[in-house]
Length: 70
Image (cartoon, rainbow, N blue to C red; front, side, top):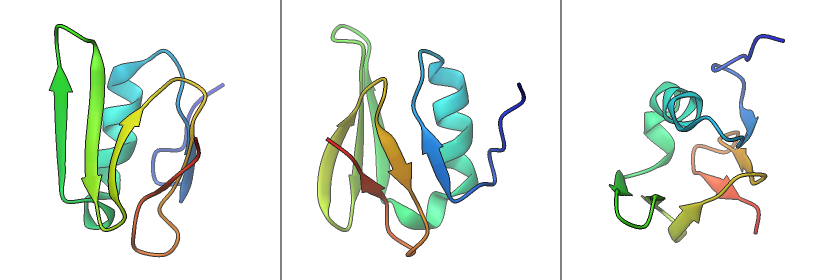
């Protein structure tokens, strides 16, 4: 199954590369990214604050801001 990285929504899986590719297609909805190599955590700063992106999370860029599920 191929992924549509231009889709407004995305479900995070085990592939960090795919998540980063989706995020780069929607750069207007967040301010910055930070990957902590030691903790293996991806931190995204956006208009609603900061979120650690984890496997299974639902990401939405439909409203021009990044909305994440818990």
